[in-house]
Length: 450
Image (cartoon, rainbow, N blue to C red; front, side, top):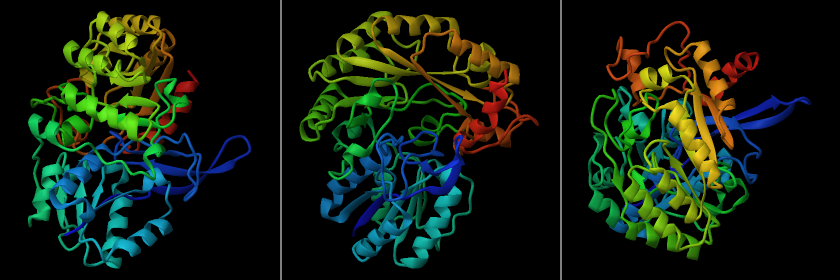
């Protein structure tokens, strides 16, 4: 009984770009990204180049070592073709080599990549008919009639335990079965491939763009907040597609994180640590404990945070322990949009104050914003532009809002309204784009003119 955990290639061909119309490859990221999307990369298939955005595939990596602990590492394979910048030809050569060794093939997918991935799945099944294909990721929430002749099993939510159910004989649609906090803290560290551990890269917050290799890790799973577009808390670390249920947070113990960082900095010599939690700084106690641990390693570190869940003294402790920058999700510069459409309930004036405070501690702040929400007007988007210009961000990220299955944003299409999102409505102005990168391209020129 052997299994391959795969993050297959995702290329969309060459696109002309720039003054001299130079053609560049459009590539996609899926596993490891909360909002899978495509972008114009710097590399070409089979020719990787540093500094393309490539997130670590967390769920895939944790499931790999979890399965290896249960059935033996000799029976478990891992292939991250996105990190390898691998061509389809190279990917199939690899499958040719190991197809006789494996019985199960796992792919994590979501709405933006699904049309591409399902075509690939059918090709794989045709070429290797004995392979039992397992689909995981947010696409598992889709209301599809899954073809059992092609897809052996569909796993909802994080899938360590559900993988083992399939290996023990189950098939079909398997519902959420999350690790308990104790199980999570007793599980192995996620998988790192000696050949590609240094391929994962995120350029923000600065100066992380200058630090390589960088390790992307979690200190927790889940988020209690219910932003309308957010995928993982709704579909992966919880089961709350309408945004009206309870969402939990499970935090790793200080002992687990200390041992994990010790291995990352010792065995792999990572130059930076990025805590890519849904919300790293939930609770001052946890944040301070993580800061205490990181102070032992004398290594720059970074984190995904929220502006209003830490005391100002806690930001100072982060800075003193080596934190050089944070990402903060603001989402919109319109308070109405933040409260009534996104359901984030973040005081924007306070957020500006916190950004200035963090900058005063010699930490960078990367603000993230999204445009094209249901019910959002052009005037609201212009408010966001003005908010960005009046706030002391080091860098910002602006993207189009992607509609991904498993989220309240997707659920809104099947309901006239959602209680938690009173300002959100589907009208003629709303673009149901599933790729945030492409949606932003359609919005950006109109906004730049203003």
